[in-house]
Amino acid sequence: MRHTTVCAALVLLASTGIARAETEVKVWSWGSAAPALEATLEGFNALHPDIKLTVDKLGYSDVKSRVLAACAAGGTGLPDLFQFQNTEMELITAQFPDCAADLVPLGFDADQQAAFPEFKMFALRQGDRVVGMPWDSGPVVMFYRRDFYEKAGVDVASIETWDDFQEAGKAVQAANPGVTMINDNLNGGAEFVRMIGEEQGCGYFSSDGESITVSQPGCVAALEVVKSLKDQKLMTAADFNGKLQNNGAGVVATQMSGAWFEGSVRNNAPEDQHGKWGIMAMPSVTAGGSRAANFGGSLLAINNNSRVKEAAFTYLSYALGSNEGQITMLREQGLVPSLISALDDPYVSEPSEFWGGQKIWELVLGRLEKIAPINGTEYFSDADQVVIANQTAYLAGGFDSAQAAMDDAAKQISFATGLPIAE
Image 1 (cartoon, rainbow, N blue to C red):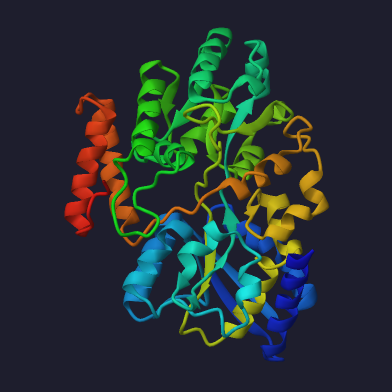
Image 2: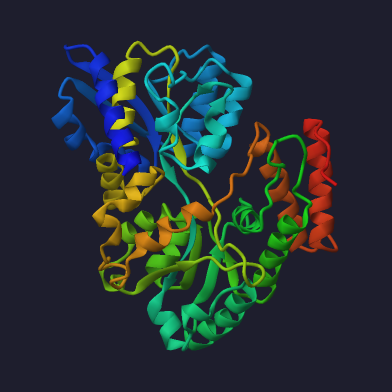
């Protein structure tokens, strides 16, 4: 396949520029991404024994704050490589355009960029420059307890819309006392609004980043779904750690997230839950929808002041630009590849014992081609905080309708950014 050849050439090309003596490359990473990087080192060092990668595992907020502070200080204190979320990379490119190195002169040319889906490359282009290599992606799926659904007589194939899901939820909860149908981070995030909104083709900003679209019908419909789930007592609040705790305790039937959550579910589940979980596509607001969105997913960027850029790029080319590196991270930590050629790897078609023998990666990676790019812009974090606050107020009765809540959010974001509200 062309992409496989391209990425193999990428590794070969990058490996020609490094020094003969041992070169140390340092990287900041968070969560399951850090052990995923470490899992690639055996294969990488078999090819490049003279490059030593040191992974510093930090919290997500720590990485973000430290990277932004280091970029503001002209790159002082920044490691050679750093992880960042795709949706927030424009914070760096807009405020600190010279902080991340351009990968094009290092060998990341147009053909190699084409080895990744457009929705991942979108935020990494800065004119002719490319300031990071796509890492994992987050196709949104539903993780569900097969045994809870089966006890209720619910066939997941019958769930196409959120109305279907809510009817199924009533049956699941009735058949499994003490179990809640689904969790969402209602107290500190607008995750469902973002995921459901994107499935409906709506993000906080227009595709060109020039106007505010958070009050458009798709985003409003997303907030209405959240309100309906909560009002019908089918949803309870839980943050990331709370979701894992509820999974382990057996008190939740479904979780919706980016597919990177697979490793967290699998690696934290007690032994008696192995084989009891399954994965299905997310519902749509209306029948016939795409049932595809992206939530989360990261990139690795090179510090523009790094003295070992070539060595850092050599590692990127292996870990992110080769099937071997990407499939290693998928197998060990459930990080979903962005590299298109990885979809053809035999591992993708293997049944998973934990997931009840389901070929989960065929379903997950099959969503990639259906995902449309969403423009986060440099204002994403600020807009997200506004939406979180208005969601909280709306669920507590502070707005008469989802439309009113999103109209108010659009006005606040417009005031803060100076961008117009889309008609």
